[in-house]
Length: 269
Image 1 (spheres, rainbow, N blue to C red):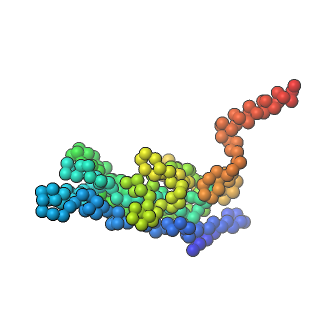
Image 2 (cartoon, rainbow, N blue to C red):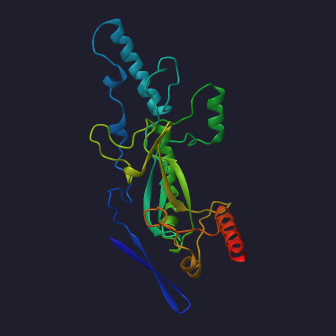
Image 3 (cartoon, one colour):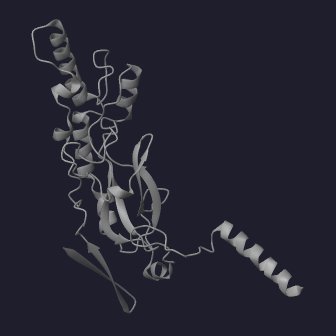
């Protein structure tokens, strides 16, 4: 489906198209990631069934694991120390359908991993004073999701702005907290264009063009004339156009200056 936004400037009518059809399957409803499916099973965390003391201990540790998964998203006691316990959720980029002034497609970054500030900064400080990890579990995550759902303006601004956005390039983490970008059971990808994700020591990252913001966090847009006049230095997929020379780059200016001096010296002699 394609929606068309028409804006009139002067005697001209400018048309910007928002393409809501996403070829790789991650559309406006987001990633296919499911916290329920991502939750580790009792067997995966070492819980065993039996009547021995080790079985009882593994069962108690299992209970502690799921309590921490709901509340903290990290080990909170010695009981769960060393267990594979991390916040659930996935970070990813979503297509907006808009095109940046430089020709690259514009994306919006979705933070699906709980950040731990759902109950405010004072609660975060209080948890630190008690020696507890931040509240990054499933329950606080639901509160954060609700807050984001009640404030959809960042995404709406990206999707339905003037049609002439000013963009900036960012490199941000993608995938889950365990460093995965696809379901380990089904191999279904959780992010757009996984072939462009780069594996680092801290997990996967992706580089995309997103809406640029001013110092107050408001989106920056251009007039139609500014948008049309801007140099189209990049392809739609975000890669730089081959052979394009940015003469506003300081290093490029220096190189051109040196070449001009050499040419002048050759002509003079």
